[in-house]
Image (cartoon, rainbow, N blue to C red; front, side, top):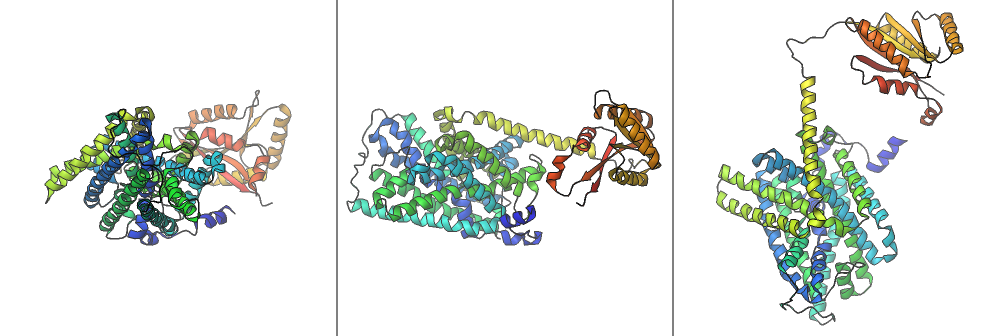
Length: 605
């Protein structure tokens, strides 16, 4: 039943040879890997306006120069990451660049930051998608956490079904969003210049006395949240069809052009319409209502905006498992992240990402504004490390045209470093937790690596000097009575050794007398040892007995404990029986010189 349900949810298992068919074309990759960056149009401008409103409505004109500054930074990042794609076609982005050029600690910091950022991407996307839905339907506002969790569950199932299938389904609403936003921008511009917009815009260029450089920098850093997701192409190059690096670079450029047009268009309309940020309604919702009224087109735009904000998480679902795979390959994350699932995706990475994102949603109660600063600073740290790593690469290798490449990455590094510092100084009260969390993540990486190194050292053998040692075998069978389960276990034990003993722990004289009588009548050819327990404990007397046998026999024999266990036909029937065999196994499995095995007997009715 469970298998059929799994097949229904994620589809048939795929052969390993089918993996090439799971690669993405440029159009599908643009939709899936750009969804995070493109969706930030829905809240990037709003984040700028929220900060500027602290100085009053008249200060909102600053959103235009700030938006153009964000656009300039986007251009720098696109050109910089295009160079990274060609330099490191194997993917991995900032982690691989930092590992190759900066060393261990910076690479782990970059990798950890990106992993945290992808978790936040899913949480922010689900929260922002919920905000768009509740803007159109305020009655749902109190259920935003549940709505966000349902969104994450949907994305998890879609991604477990495989990259190609999820891309085919999810690309449609993503392109609908792009078309809808460009229709909104074009119609909004026509509406404004034809006199259809009646709201008074703040006077452009007017000096506002209470606008400080600190406030402008804070607004700029907030607007830079629109740039998250730009690095996804360089992380997920292995997901592209061949030639992967050329396709990834072309897709990155297409994403940059689309994002630039949408972001500046929304910012201009928000200024021309005199839009003020509101807790109950998003900026895009207000622009759409001003342009079209609360008619069909308004609800279409709100619908596709909500969908794209949800699907923005798909960038993380594409990039997180790949980055986790690379870290696991280097032994900084559990090996489970290297395993491909039935549909050839890294299923453990997908599920892990979903669980952590859902926890964040519940902790923050779906509040997007509280998550975005953490989200943005988490990506600007690897932005900076990646640019710095590329600078050192050009200086070290000096390929043809390296001076221009060095200049591009230097400008990129200085710009992203500045943004990171602005975030730290202007939003420290909101992002301080990341300075505790990121070192903790790096420490966990190091501990995992140390564990794998220690494990390898202890498991490694000298092929020339270490050979198997032949020893005898003393087999101990804990029994609860004379049953077919014990018969099954004794029969198996006799194939292993001639030195087999059964052990019974009795709580009273009557039970001891009965077991001795039945054992003697049965006479299986195995000696029975009776242990009395005054405190009704099975484990205590059994442990002492095994200690005694081990003391006497460890030099000449292996000590094997065979635990009889019957397996019921239905899982719920297990609940009707005590689980002594499981407790014995759980206790003995940690004994250093004792081999523990379960001998099952399957019930047929």
